[in-house]
Image 1 (spheres, helix red, strand yellow):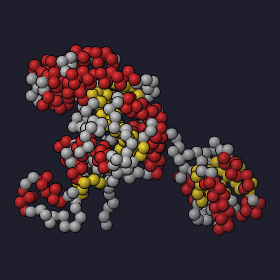
Image 2 (cartoon, helix red, strand yellow):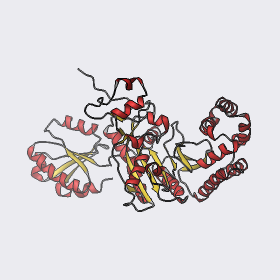
Image 3 (cartoon, helix red, strand yellow):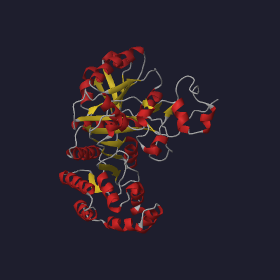
Image 4 (tube, one colour):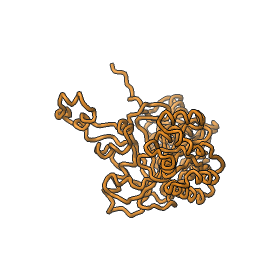
Length: 453
């Protein structure tokens, strides 16, 4: 007999876990809508050509391809199997599970451009799939929660998205750091040092500055072919310190000869100047931040939780030509994403979930027989009309079994309507937390429950 199992990187969710995830999502939806974002959904899978070439070589490798239905090997020849695997893939698969929500959104905007009111604000909460190596906080199936604005180059959009991050994490009572950089600054550094072809190697090495120190970072850059002269020009970057504005002032001396780099500084200064009264978030200039260089064109954002060891729990940035890959030019955009699964892990580790995700009231009606159950059902109908969770134990079982079910099911109260209660139109309600019991008239029960804490 086959033992049941799950594919690596996927999970089942218990009722309690689902309630906790829904709690997080409910907060996201609340603030997405308060900030004027509208919901859309896209299919779980896209044409393979829609996704490939948008995430870099590594991203393409992690896309889950879907085999064509029927005789999917009919177009594959023996010599194909000895050649490039990409040639085989194109013959056996023309669809794939979506890798993220951003590229499908870009495709959506292009296809529906004549129906949308620009600037268009959209939010989307759906699962994505990546053929990645599973580890803590990294799964093959996970949800993304995205908010994007397309059709405007205004930097006020970045300000709005930072405030959106802060509003959501404040509602979750989760302190975070919002790291920000600008692609134009990174491009400016590459121009100043004349290492445009080594930009990724430079930023990957620079990202390790806090972990391995300046000398080892320089060693790694030299191993990647970055010259001593280039490193010397960029050496002030290793020493930049102080608050946000002070770091930008120091950066100006490095990038004085780069028009692109100076534009990046001006954009970050504007954003920083407009950010006011963040409650649970701290805005940090992080010159090593270089996520998504394949399509980000301006601001780059990444969110990290304080007081816990975890990778980023959110990120995004400005992508002024993402729709250009589908033929729609000059459609600026900026967006952010919330990592639902990692946020769940952080809240769980820091014990930040509210005590009861299902609500304070959850009432079980004991079953004493057919007539008694029928009377209970009438009362349950009125409770449910008033938004109170309740259910009837399905069998006329021993009371010990029914109370065991109530305890395991996290019920708050048990209601008992037996033969005598039927005759007298009374009932008994027991508070499972305090053990207190009360006898009430059935006609007074609804009002009594409404007043319970």
